[in-house]
Image 1 (cartoon, rainbow, N blue to C red):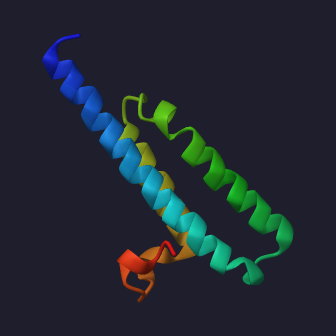
Image 2: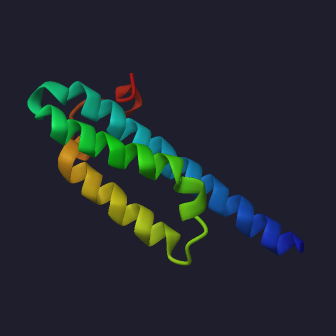
Length: 94
């Protein structure tokens, strides 16, 4: 594989890892919000987050991966409202 393709693949993997971490943050936030959701609703949202996280490596192979991942992240943020949180982002996971 040519060096420029290796760099491109490595960049995609780093971006995929970034998005995985972001979705994990949203999953953690969702866990704290669990009391505010009906159990079935919570389970459905959690299942969607788990699927996105599990399939991120395959998703990064899609041509417009960054746009798709960004769109999914925005849609999840509508539910968790993490981006509007006043908590310091470095403390949001734990």
